[in-house]
Image (cartoon, rainbow, N blue to C red; front, side, top):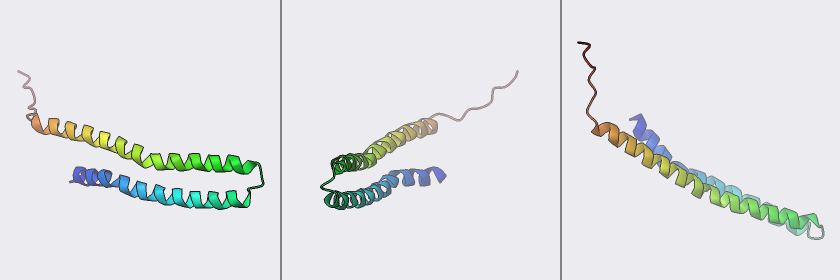
Length: 96
């Protein structure tokens, strides 16, 4: 029961993470765009925009990397549980 709930949570957690990171990325990009328009004359604005673009790319890749990692974990977990279910129950050895 707990394994099934954990499995369900892990399978759908990447959607929640993806939505949250997408929202944060859009908010960050809008704020960076407004800042870069206000600071166009400054030399540091170029660095700010390039850093913001880098953060945007990284935050866009994080959900993909997270879901790949979770899928590998789930595949491993299913193999382990399948092997445990297929093996016969162990009986204690008799001392004599």
